[in-house]
Length: 128
Image: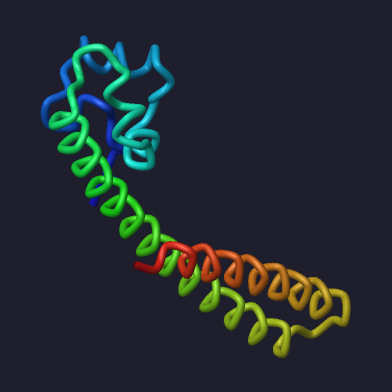
């Protein structure tokens, strides 16, 4: 399963290469920039009227929300995978013969648990 690409300006309905270039020149380099822009800011770009600004902005918000859902799903999967790995490492640490090996595995498990917490917190930030 391939990863979905980050949406480009030309992915928005009504934006071709020329208008995308005008948007970039006026500081709108990404779909997120358009999603969070005020309609007045978009109408300042040549070739965009008030009706077009509203429709472009709405579509950009839809794409941004879609990207946020993908990010949340990826982070949830990552957190789950890291928690499993940490559990496995703790089990290996209990079975280790030497103290040095046990300490090393416990340290690795602790770092993996921290990474899992960060991934879970990131996923929570993208809750809808």
